Image 1 (cartoon, one colour):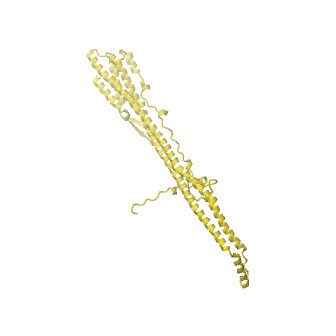
Image 2 (cartoon, one colour):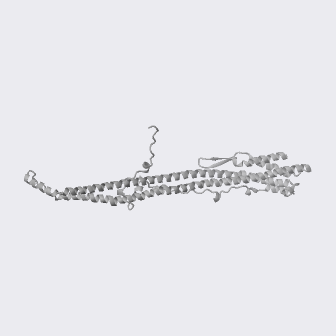
Image 3 (cartoon, helix red, strand yellow):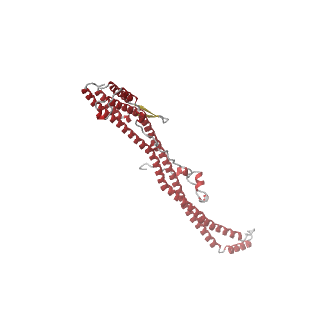
Length: 386
């Protein structure tokens, strides 16, 4: 093989090295299995180049000084290019390592965003819901202990008073055709009821007023109950949305990570290793073949069969470029997104047995909760012009 042909071969190899990371196609099967395929024939090129360099090294050095000097210059160029190829491999490794970290960080971001969203929910709608819960409980307690008690007391007083008047009223004659008896009864009733009307009216007014005060206070408590239940449903919805967003984000980010990992391992275990080993062997053969200008490279100038065999036996694969997937570069596990605290929500029996029970409040004074699906139902959209 001529020096020019060999040089072209190395240049072609260098170009392929620069685009090694782009020459792997990945396929994700329905079951999640990832498979990769190499789309270039650079393995053949690398091995072909190695065979040619090996042949040159074994053929020995020309006797003609002019030819030696010419070949020396070509070998210098090849040696320089091989170093560039190895440097490119190292750069590819760093690039892929950074990408591994970036994709692991993307997975972590899903957890971080979820945590930030939960903190915002807890400092916002959760805190507001807790506030309405306490206000509603206090309102119902006042309704029961003050306004309901006052209403019962005053209306019971009216009922009792009217019953006492009725019970002590003169008995009506059995014979209503007896005019004298009826006259006597009417006179007795007049004396009995005289002055009772004013007292009855006062008690009735007090009862009606207590009813009105209680009704107004109950309406206030009902509105606080509505606000509490709406807040609870909103809190639940935002938690559910946050968990769903995190799940989608995490699964997508993990898919990207796993695809990149599979591609990188494919490169590291095949292309990079083959290319690295071939390059290191080429370096070795150049060292053997190049003797006259050894001072320029500070290399051994003894080209014998022992050194050729050493190049053939060289196995630098254990030092080939690798990308780490250790803990430092591994994606974190998915952070738990719990919905336990909102599993009992308005519209479920569990909500009433948790929120509307003694000693929090008397369930007899709470109206039937509306279901979250009803509370959170969006308003119908009305077309413009209607």
